[in-house]
Amino acid sequence: MEKKNIDWSNLGFAYMQTDKRYVSNYKDGAWDEGTLTSDANIVLNECACVLQYAQTCFEGLKAYTTEDGHIVTFRPDLNAQRMAASAQRLEMPVFPEDRFVEAVHKVVEANAAYVPPYGSGATLYIRPYMFGSNAVIGVKPAEEYQFRVFTTPVGPYFKGGAKPITIRVCDYDRAAPHGTGHVKAGLNYAMSLYAIVDAHEKGFDENMYLDSATRTKVEETGGANFLFVTKDNTVVTPKSPTILPSITRRSLLYVAEHYLGLKTEEREVYMDEVKDFAECGLCGTAAVISPVGKIVDHDREICFPSGMEKMGPVIQKLYDTLTGIQMGHIEAPEGWIHKIC
Ligand code: PLP
Ligand code: COI
Image (cartoon, rainbow, N blue to C red):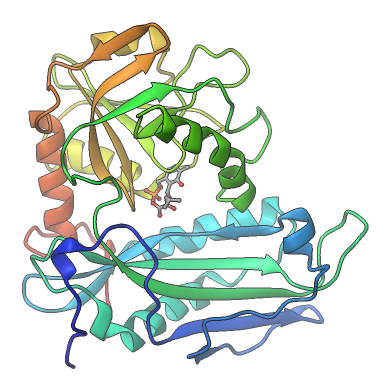
């Protein structure tokens, strides 16, 4: 298979249309058998539930070229599980988890020419999603749905790659107690658009959201979970019922304990203690681990000892180990790597 002629090393995190995508429709209480299609466009009724009431959820994962030339994905079963949880919370039918993994497999295989080569620094981002497609005007769930998966080759989520970023504590909320913060509902991201545009205009790379009930605890950013490292090298990550259970974060905690022999804590993290950490990073599929150099909390600045030039030493080790597992030069725990071809 010949790769597409793409300047892989200079890709940003942007959409590029690839050849094939997967589509399955839900009607009369059942999903159809699903198919790959070349058509990247969707025609919908003007009153489709997704357009009126945002009945949609999505996932994000990546395909990697390993050192020995295989194409793999990372823990797609966990994305399938999380999408099932999102669908249930949004009153949508679950797309069966085994079929989710199979759909991802087929789309990546069909777009193998777009999977960036090993060592290019780029990956193939995979976006499964589903939405209520029939016309609904009273507020109620749709009866018909579409599940789709497309792919797009991407580079780093934050410009500058591994350079530490500056974020601000945000005065807007992302998720309410007992709301939808713990699932990957499109509406959570609509909520964050005003805040991210405002943050960018003011020169910040991202927003740090606090818990909306007390505004004292660290939650997450618009698209990633937090990871902190204490001065004695314990990896700490916020625990909250209103943040997305990041697959990257869960994997990193395992890597910290079992590969690097570090202590880990998943617990409430108060904003007041953030100044005492040695390192801070954002973790997620898109973000991988993006180091945070500075947090601006209104008139107060928290500058981490790791500085603005490079990742701190513990975050660097976590990054190297996780990406080593994904790219196949460090042995993965059982079941983490799904081989495509
Ligand atoms: N938090 C939010 C709000 C996200 O959108 C994402 C991205 O999926 C994450 C965290 C990281 O999750 P994961 O590591 O599963 O990609
Ligand atoms: C991801 O990391 O996959 C995300 O969904 C974050 C962002 C691009 C929305």
